[in-house]
Length: 142
Image 1 (cartoon, rainbow, N blue to C red):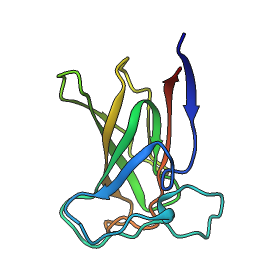
Image 2: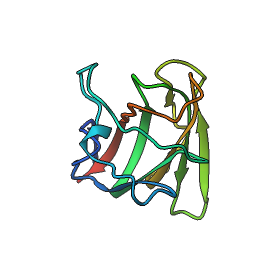
Image 3: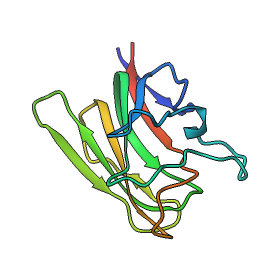
Image 4: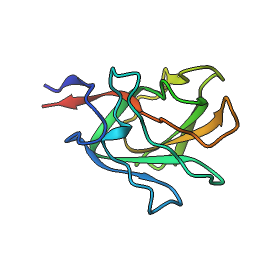
């Protein structure tokens, strides 16, 4: 009988993650700086001036998202778009405008392997900087 398993590991280097990219910015490298860590002086990813700031995450296996947050940066609002394989194309979730914006309470029973995080606002109207992602999900295990 399948059981659930919570995934709370760093995003970059995670064995469940197939790829992390920035839309429309092939030269912007996502590396270990995207991982949440306890060091408040640690730098996350700094974005250049762009039209939109979208981080695309593709998983190797199906997951059920629990929450996505962008802590300790100048980002003050975000949107998470979740894509499904079932024929229903996607579902959009918005955070409140706040310090350390978070999207939680994903209202679906459907797993996903692909989602996008739109960094939709900053508190200083500058490009997002020091961006780290904290993503918690769960998956069914055998």
